[in-house]
Image (cartoon, rainbow over all chains, first blue to last red; front, side):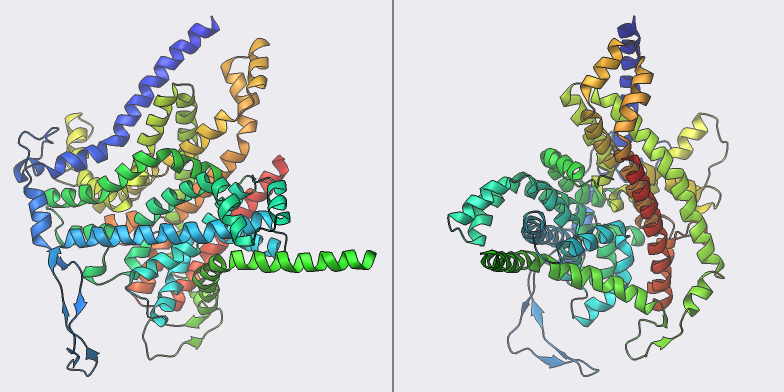
Length: 307
Length: 302
């Protein structure tokens, strides 16, 4: 009796969940199909649910319309003064579609943020979990308090600090605040707490140095945590639009999100081109997410502050 | 004897302290320089009349910015919009994600993780890609919403969704909703998986209905997760920025300004740096207060 009832409910909820899942994937479906539609189908007032003729026109436009240098080398002995007297140098380097340069920037930014965060956070998380030292609880309280505050608020003061440090409009200005954000330390502390104290104690008695203990005993044990933090940092820094918007300005330094946003502002109604850009920006990160989603899920659940 | 032991302890403590700080040093450097210092500067600059110019000197004006803040109609409107977003988004996100999570945890593991991925997709897609496609869907002439509602006979004239102050904020809340449920669903699935199964079985043997099992046994056990979800959803909704900047730029006529967007607007469009920081401090205080309330609630739960 009870089982039958719950079976009917189960089928009902499966149907609802499937409908919801279709609605949630629809925007992505619309981006991808939209990017392959011809101008006529894109701008038709009756939506074309499935492109009748698939075209690469939108991607060709994305690659040909905007250009940026892939990298720039300083031309030797080319120092000169601009009209207002500031010294400058000439640059030379190959030109590529701007979207490619933006993608290179984004990958470089996300990888740098990921590596630096994992390195600093795993060292610090281990210290906070397993070392007993003066000021430990104070630092930990500071970290938990900072995590409860809105991250975006500090961006306004940060821009002045970055200008003063001559980091404005460089990838470092985006990467360093991500590394400083204490979520990673908190997450790694959660993982490091699971290391049994006796193992560390016996390593000390055997005369292992602190660094050796970390690399041979601690690191292998917190490796799943580092994996989770790595993928989490990679995806969240890739998508941290506000920070990129504030810190980066020149065309060659944009990330892919920023580049697409600017393109959208300039070409409001060319939906085909915008969808091609959106697909170009979103598909790589979605693939990364789907491959590593197990680690990602672990990072989210372990990072949850309990009561 | 006693003395030598305490001497040994002291050297051990010193050694631990040095090692501890050496391990902490790289992380602490980034944390202090790029998080704590700007937070401090945010508070400090909020007492100055300051702009982004290079050669101008900030003048101390005490609580001047804060006084102006509470007479600024646009700021109060932005605060009202933000509160509307939070009040609508937080309960709906929690209820929706709890329902979806409890529906998908009973399924086969493959299906559970497939659905988890699907509901997380809008988050991973990134705010820019998500907003540009929604902007197209909301479009006055080419948008899918006007087409669907017109064919269904709900409306007879095209609605300019984002250009109409009556609808614009609700359109934004809808997108915010789809990009906010991913993380809560992941958290709820894991919390429901950790519920003590022996209690659930015992209750079922005693003849409890599924509803009773849920409210009497599962709900109290997932309470800490619910509180955490409420806090993160509140913080995220308070920080709603990218959607506004990309969709409406606060328009039409400031009707979709949120506090975060207005901070950006004052600091980077009006170059009123100190004033923007004063708003940031107010936002920090509101969120700190809400987090403290949650913390207290969590403690009384235990």
